[in-house]
Length: 124
Length: 416
Image (cartoon, rainbow over all chains, first blue to last red; front, side, top):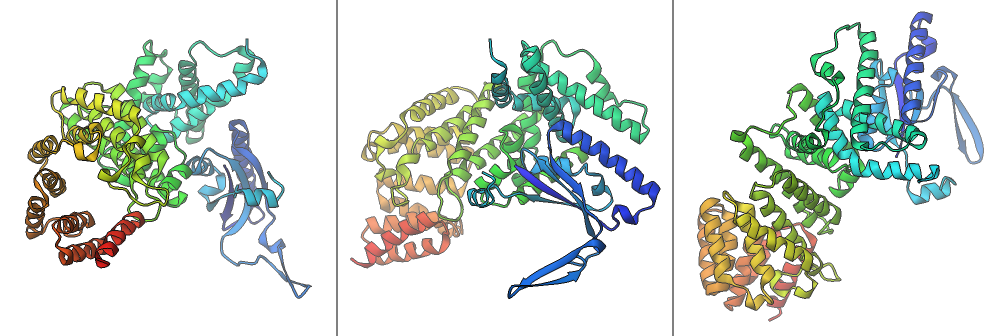
């Protein structure tokens, strides 16, 4: 089973002091090396801050756009991991070690693997 | 000689056969389920990398345990660096001592220890069930959720909380002392029987039986019997489950309707399960200290051995209920005994016993009692009383096949 772990925190890297950010980066290096070794790793990346976001809508064939993310909350998504785990409880154990979990929170979303989704998305 | 391509398959096979036992032992060594699960995962990861080059070790089980232990120590040392702790705690220090000589023996005991931990009375029954199915049977969170028709996140949280409780309350990984053994074994057997019953009939919804859970419960019963061969209630419970399970194919017709014992096609009963169940009951009855599971299994065995419903030995069944009633007095036993008495001495006698239960205020929310009462009235030709009791029973059950059964009887009577 694959799970998406969304890392939410009040501060993203760009909003931290250089020393804090460097330290946080090193924690991510260690964690990511670990889960590559353990075989849980599928994919991951860091997202630029929500201030860089643009939200678009298409209505009657026309694009309209607004600055910023489509939900304004204090906590922002700073990055994500896609992990492979035996089950939801193993995913919880892995996600608990994401450095951001100790600062903000991590939302774990099971990734769909029903036949229709796999077929439609060409993932089968 | 196995080719290199075969190795992942072989390792996977070893994983399937061994991971439950290896996990139980790692839990004893590490004193923590989460750490043990990680160590298990790491050990198999290394096996997958090393075995194709170096060959499969003579005793893969011992190899996995010892690699898992070393990985755990490794991790501990690394974390200790961060937490600036220099001392290795005593329980981990013992890890570094040479591996046990009699590892295989202690592996069996470790599973037993873990069963008692998972079924510890300070955990809620829901938590006991979820933890047992995951840590002993190796089911995934999602599989457990599917079997119980609940959300995976609900099961996941139960498991997370139960593990935290075991850690915080320092629930030990051990087989209880003799003086507590019988109480504690009761709660283990209860968990197994709950798992079985969940598969046999659900409290609501249209799906009456779910196969996987009954197989898991029977497997747990077998494992326990292997680990504690002299406890009479273990073969008793295993027999009870096998005998009930043997009727699975006959219990529901193609339309999903419930078929009562006396109308079941007995040729559909699983003979292997019946035979094994009967042997186990006889074995359990020969051990001292048998109890309610063994007696219920003995009753099921009388049914199983009757060639037809009409040839059932009701005298024997009433006799067994009399013993059961003495050891474990309960209104449910009284009700079942009333049904057996009705079969032996006629519906009027059964009705009298049920009326007595009602006058004591017993089981007044239990649909089965009104269904039995209705049946007795029907057989006595008391149409109005029977209709009233069927209506009462219908109000009390949500289970679809049972509702259809009661409705069918009710309609038959109303059309008379």
